[in-house]
Length: 341
Image 1 (cartoon, helix red, strand yellow):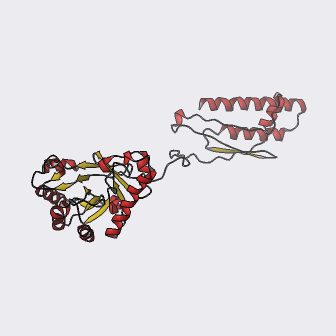
Image 2 (tube, helix red, strand yellow):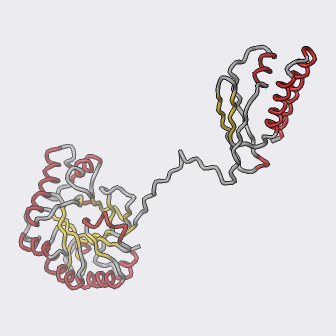
Image 3 (cartoon, rainbow, N blue to C red):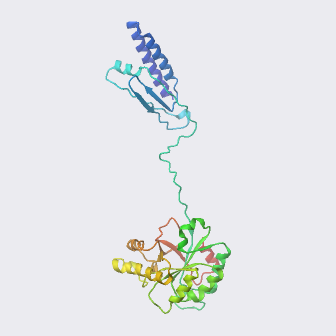
């Protein structure tokens, strides 16, 4: 502010020197000098304006003052006054500056200055975190070297009972775009489509009215679900069938062959839709393997891609890199509860 005051003082001195010289030389133009003096007083009274307008006889020049800080004692004010003509001649400069001006002052706001042009007023999307649980099949008996893929039906029922009693919502991928309205979503997924999904798991689902997703690979196999089982489960509204490719081939191994990759992605989708009469929107990559090419092609046929990447998933992650938590045969109910986050 001191800098501004000294600037005004220096300007006033120049004005009065010029006016005095003119008066001594000719004794004329006294009314003009008085008008200049009054104008100078008005200018001197301006301490901290937000905006001013300089109006000359021929043109109107607008200048805005940029205030960089809000505390009065630290505010620095820069005023740019534009003359219509400036030459390397002191007399010309003084004459231009002391021409009669009109000063319009707007009241200084006490509110903080906000640059609305750069303010980001778009709502930030909220991140939803939730478990996507991965199973394969089930058996009470020990099935050998792949035992961890066979959850005990008795343990699976404990897990479903816990979720039901603790207000979790059983979701399929048709519910994905409504997750913001679901307080505690949980996705239960089974890969491959084994017969035990019908004989052991389906009765538990009906008991608790729980929904699951089965990722089915279509190549016929006597150990897996029949077409009649698939249709019955699908028609119940408790099981949503999605794709696990046509032949359970590792997609990264064939990603350089466009024709094979498209067949595995497209044909499995079409065959499952023909069996269930429902649109297939998600794929589980066999062995959880994918690369950039696999993702690009998967996006041509599906809305979601599931991996075996471990951990809770959240809506801030790519929909074609959905994480899952594998639930094994030996996981206790306490371990299961920890999986939920």
